[in-house]
Length: 158
Image (cartoon, rainbow, N blue to C red):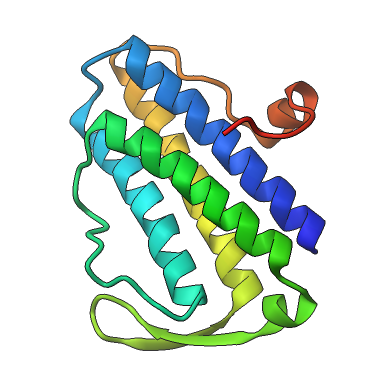
């Protein structure tokens, strides 16, 4: 499972980076896209702080960040997630994590389900980016996992 999660987060970075490159080429980008990318990256940071037992509740998951901050956060998140995943074992992935959301509702989930959720959550929102870019006549990058598998080999250069 560890290798799968490491590959999943490498893919996540690759896909986010393709959009961050597009953002630089087409400035300004739609406000909604920038807000959603901010949401994705801040949520990934928040989930990792929860998993590690020190939830950063000062994070705002619906605040638009400047493009420069998004690029920095994307790299920071990837480094932190990959380091966490590399050090984790099956017992960690199977661990039940209790936490509360921003509405103060308590939940308990398996850590592996949270890991999968955060990657799927990003994929969901990247699909929204694609629609929003197409609506303004900009062809979005292909961020399908199979495209990543065909094109990417090796280590991330962060």
